[in-house]
Image 1 (cartoon, rainbow, N blue to C red):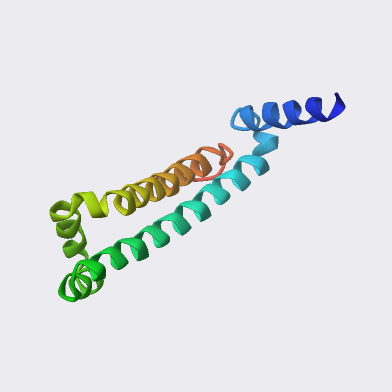
Image 2 (image 1 turned 135 degrees about the horizontal axis):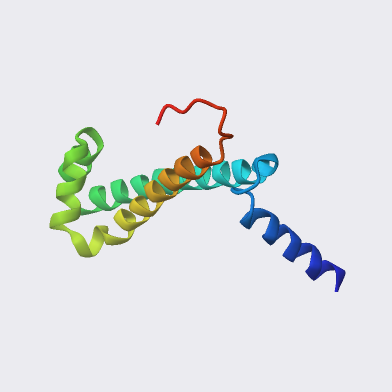
Length: 115
């Protein structure tokens, strides 16, 4: 029973970290973790999309490798094939943006903000 209480105390601590200025460390850690996982997901999805483009044809692969707008064109033309890597990229970017927002809100009031 004590194990469950420990888990709930950690959940409570994370949930209220944004309101308590002395407990920003956990929120910063979680924001950093979300940013790292988002970057990994985005990189993996880009490689996956590049593999799909090269599987379709070598010119599509070279175009997606050298010209970023060609990746969007590939996704639009070959939606069925490129849907999963594209959505994983969107999820990864969303995780990075959320991490930046969460870490920004975790700053104490006396720290000047660039946003």
